[in-house]
Length: 304
Image 1 (tube, rainbow, N blue to C red):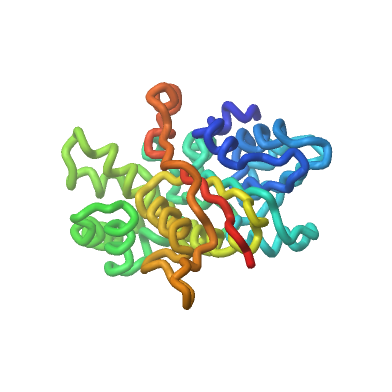
Image 2 (cartoon, one colour):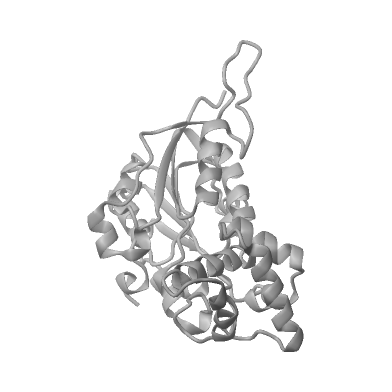
């Protein structure tokens, strides 16, 4: 399958430029997908450069690149350091992450990611994982469903929606996207329903794939992995992700104040490079999935 059919890379030029690629360096693309970002990184590498890519979705393997400098690792990026150690890699020159769901995952109906198709409730990035959207919707408590919809979808009436889900599933299991959509539709106007459904699907997907936990684990590994002056280039798509990335780049933590040493010097692993970047109007027009993307770039500072 051609990469352009699988997924159109977002903020491609900006995210690659942010890596300030050394042709002989070692780089990691932790969200391979259709391979668009990886192919661009390879085009900047010399014959001694190396690129490792991660993707837990077995469908992404069909996009693997036949290049001796490239190696695709079928694993979640939350295990970044462990798998790179298997390859004998302890430090890298740059890490790129694009946390968007690929167009392919949305467009394959049976994966259950999209509000557009009738399908079994799934949403697993890795189909071998045990818990999918069905388990979340049919077995999670009222408290947990409320938390997911409130925190990940940022919807104020989360408790009311969660209560209706539980009331409905007491009569019979909620098995398909069509059944689930029917539960949600009465809460919103016709003008808002698609947007709200998309946000609720996003929330369930985040829970199913433990995306926030994986993001935190990934970010915590980057200071050790990056060489001094190494670059981190991260594209996020919703406020919760972006807030974590922003705070970590600023302070090395996910919340709280920057720590300082005895002399008042900030104890932080990164310095931000440039300003927050978002897609141009032209890119948004050409790729609707780019609209909420935000790119932040950071440089690893003195490791001593």
